[in-house]
Every structure is written in structure tokens, then in C-alpha cells.
Image (cartoon, rainbow over all chains, first blue to last red; front, side):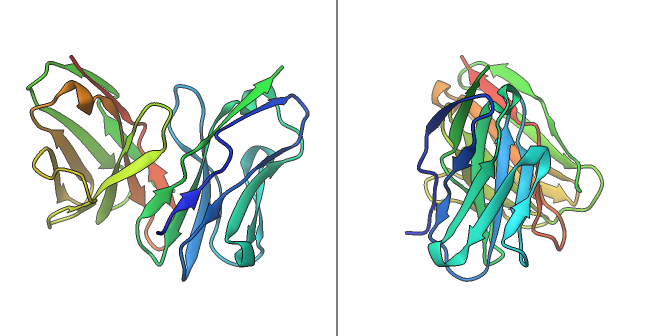
Length: 112
Length: 115
């Protein structure tokens, strides 16, 4: 079945640690890929997106993601996390110009 | 990018009553809007795709008679939760797709509590 998978449900890191959140999808055809962040009590915000071109995408707040087509992956990374990065992170896929589908989300807790 | 306004942000209603949630695209005309539901500690689940001037397309398992969607204009889509029950308590979010870019902008969400 077509799906978006985020394997890490809850990640706990100390400040300055490096972050990588996994995202895999099973859609074929043309895909547009997104990472959204939801800070506590706030609405969804777009971190970054991939449509085409350079598979390494840089977003806001120092986040980046790499699209690896052969692995159907779009992992999110940040070299050094901060306490303010504590939030819920959602990977999303828009396949073949259809609607957006979300992964289950990963809760990131950064300890000060 | 698009600016999306969702109202109300919070609503508490009695069981059996109906609640209407509005989603407005403030700066461009949206022929398509999406309604999502987010359960606690869960991801967003697409409920339906709202199409201006035509019937909404509902996802499997979503009761169309319970969750009425009206997209009467290019800037407004409404979701009405009819005869609400406590199990309908959730966070409802609308989304608009930016024309031609596949970018999505989300409303700030509506926290519905049915008591």
C-alpha cells in the first residue's frame, strides 16, 4: 500500500547533538516531498520542500533534507540541535499531483 | 505564499449539536482545499478534498453525512461537524495548495471538544 513512514516516534537529544529523522515513502511516479514542523501549541509550518533539481535541500533554521530516489527516502538533518527545536516533525508526500499524505510524525525532545 | 485563516481556533460544544469550522484563503483563489484531522499524538489524516463549486471528495472511512463540507466560493471552505459526539473531539486543520507550485499552507487549526 502507498504510505509515508517515519520510523522514529520519539527522539531525545541533548543540545548540540546532530539530528537525523528518517522518512520513507512508497509512492511511484513524480513525488514532491515536504517536512513540516509543529511547535507545541502552534500550527504546522513548512521547514523545507523538494520538487526537483538538487536532491539536497536546505530549509529554515538550519535544517536540510536529502532526497534519495533509489531508497525512496527524504531524511531530515540538522548538524546541531537547540532546545528550541523541540517539536513534532512530519514528513509529507504529494504524489502525482494528488493530495498530501503525512507520516506519523516524530516527536523531538531536546534537553538543555 | 498563501495565507490561510481558520476559525474558530477553539470550540466547545454539547453532544448532539453541530459545529461549523471556516477556512479562508486570504490572498488567492483556491479551487481546492483539504481538511485534515489530527488525533492526539498522531499524524494528520486527510478527511476530504474540498472542491469549489462541486461536491467534496471524502477519504475512505470518513462519514460524509457527519462531516459536511461546503466550498461555495474560491476563498472559503467550511467543515460542519453534525450531531457531534465526544469521539469527534479532535484537532481539525485545513490546507490550501498554492497554485502551480504544489506548496501547501495550513490553517492554524481548530480544537473541537465535545462534552
